[in-house]
Length: 509
Image (cartoon, rainbow, N blue to C red; front, side, top):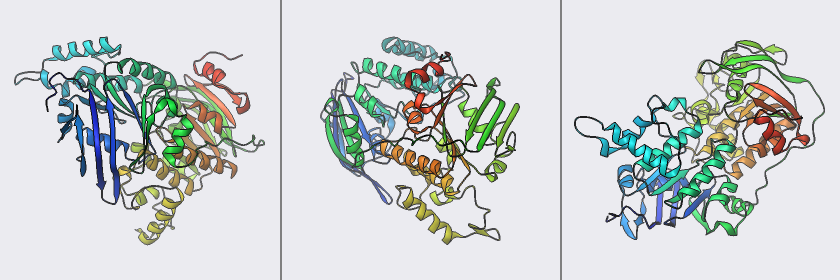
């Protein structure tokens, strides 16, 4: 392909079709992007967005169709071919080596800096400095990846991709793990970069789609169902086209009357992985039959709180009283037996075993129960029937329950976890970022499930950075800052302004 000037003036995919065993992931998809344009690619979880982009990056080969750059057909056998043609992708799961520096991570793919005798680090460093200066990106070449926040790691991914010569940028769910402040900064940055680059932006957050993109293409079940100018359509219009029906995120009902305290946390102190106190004498109580929202900027102790409650992190001092039983420093199996349900932050590494089937993940916590085993042998026929019922009830989109859980889209993995936890009928549920990275249809389903369980008398601790989610679902809202609860508000008295002030550590009078 003749692309000697390094510019991509247009990129088109025509009639792309791709199937996997039992699944037609992409069906006759066509789209185009011109120089300086931002195209939003949206659709429900499992609609085929990531598969299409992986074909564009040479990670998969399409069964039918072609890719054209500057109107000339190309075929990428590997990501190296795509990178050489000026296409780069920032994946939802960052492709960085944690125990290496930013400089070393960029150098891994920087072929020009390699020679038979040694790696030219000075060339890599000057390239990083050139890119960070041109696009106003902040990245310390000597910082280790494990030392960086999620937002900082994402900037490193952008720097790495641009250092490798990308003129066409694919961003897969770039804001799914960012704080609201980091998201705003990224939108401004990408708008600035779009003067120089073409961008495909995959996102479920439709306000961001409206703020950033020029055009929108909508996929549903592997097919294009809409193409148009973003400015001509509201987020509600786009959501309806994505799902095939009007989407309205549910809201809590009136506050519940005071009932028994389910979870009573007193003076809880817990250390972070780096050894400092992530929770510092934290107090919080949650009643049965209410959703307690926990609002805060990422990194203020939310993860440590959830892990301490579920027996996954050592408690330095304090009590975690669960219907009167202290869970502090008890084992996860003890906590589960008391009736605690848990939707963890990291769905892929903590919520499921990716290589296990869907049906095996459904019973991870219950293999020793008489319902599923007898004399040490699993009741396979019953497990199959049980799994199929859950798949239908929770609308888990997969060819069957024997498929590996790790092969599912993010929204379907979250439904697997939710189905397992709710089917066990726990007395309480800790839900950490339950809709992070999910489309509005999946979020609507999960919100309805949480509200239904609340009406049944469950106590729920909802940890989220999405203030709309917190305000829509919670009966009360606690704001956490530097490991302490700043204030607990009745939901009716909470708004974005007073929550934002408390989240920033400022006293709200």
